[in-house]
Length: 332
Image (cartoon, rainbow, N blue to C red; front, side, top):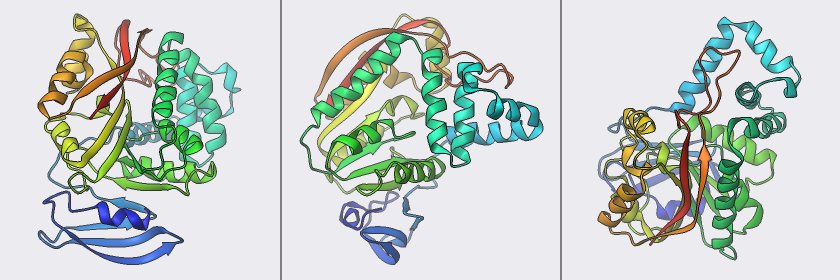
């Protein structure tokens, strides 16, 4: 993480001030350090350049950890499946297996081949309308931020697709965040390989309890990140606490009358933010003024199952064909 980020940070558990001990730096990146809360005495390390600001009192499931560890365990028990995933020509694999191949390659640090496999999987996993809507939102966020030089905090960065777009086109510091240290380690290695790492800081925290001071964030973005936060609770009030400028969220909303997907969404604990009216109501209740920009609709279908990994499919939603409403939600 960058040294100049220190002035924006506090203890996410009690919002107390931090006392820092910096042990190792590389230019203006802090590689190893510890931050101690002056009030509750909590300790937050920086390890391998990643600031770890996770609190213990919020329950959370690391779905990336679960997916990758489950994949690793399955392939250990079925080595013939791994041989097929890695050795069969990429074009001969089904789209789900192309994406699982990408996960294995990424875990092994082969990010160039992983990206090829990931890109090859997309037309078979998603409808043309889905992909067109998604790419349009990435372009819209970039256009909205064109010319910006201020720091951008990207929430729930995941695979860093939006971060890569912003780092390639904008000259501004970017904070990559996720509550999974595992995915942030992947992101660090990938961004270094792509030579996009220099302006980047990496922070692990739960969006429901961030380590930022009140009003410290001028610009926050997220790329479908809201839909992946389970049991959001007071998430938006927490974001309102830290955001002094604007929040740009790429989102897709499910139809209110889609009962089949509604049941699956409810079981995942994601209901409020995956529906337009309830999402807007929650943003308003948290004190945001919201506009929906670049609104589009596109058909979506369940991602196909793997032919090699029993019952495995890349995405949990949708579970039935539907039409999603895509937009860039801009909250002030």
